Image (cartoon, rainbow, N blue to C red):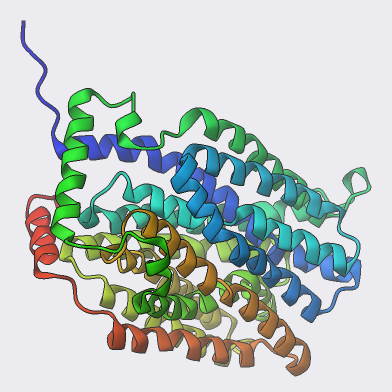
Length: 444
């Protein structure tokens, strides 16, 4: 009787990817939709509730204050109790908060619920980034990060038309406005997904009963090899928080998130200002732009892994996004077609920079220091998510156009390339050698 062939490393990683990534991507899609559906709800919500652009900008951005305050504790809790319980708790609570948004009647309640949404969601994104480092070595991570983060683009593809269809088709049903139905119908799936997470996720490779003993041994050995190749890294929590490289990463990511938040929360408004006023049409245009953004994230992450280079893959992508945003400011509302092309390029450039960026801190942080450092980078940098919408809303209200805000955002994002060139060193020769060797054995 023939014996089964021993498992190979590549086949085992493919099995892990098919087990973890689709589920995590679904969670990220739900998270992204519940976070940014306010941008579509705004098209009806502001006139119904008599909110100003400034009120909307503050409410959209205050999410990131709660996010900032709770993200590091959440990631440290994940390191202590495991990803399964932590991610389940996060998903369930943000779903409840999204549903509660349908009952907003005042600016105060709007601010409170958006703040709580940030509190509840805090830790999900950096938690998944940390979680994936438990399963993949350095030279495989950019592609995996890109796959996971491309779910935000898929959320844009799904969320825009879905929100537009709900707002158009459900407006007035049961006496509720279309924007209220958006929050209800998009929040319930997250509540159910939080329960499902408890039964599906596995904390670490050693606990993966769906892998054979030989496969678990292969992964553990490969991760140990990767840790040895990276050499000494910071493991102490407090030391990582004082590390100047962490704060350099914060500055870089702040610039990228400034642009990402502006495009996320004001993208639908830019489309409308360009002359496309129907909510469903706005949704489809944003859907197409995010589809391009998702492709950019995956392709840029894949090329980064194959070359072993991360700094320029991040910096140049961000610069392309910045240039497109600046051009967009000149095209709205004069040239609607060209403006939509510029919007799509801005989303592609900005989103493509994000997964590759997360290769940078992983090269000098490990263990609990990685849990704290990654969360700190994401939480502080995401304060740009508060500042960008608030400033965009203020400038839109006081200038009558989104252009001034877009130019300011473009200048901030362009700074990311300058900071990367100034502070981020090239990858070690060992990482580049390993990437080149693996690329030689992969299909093009």
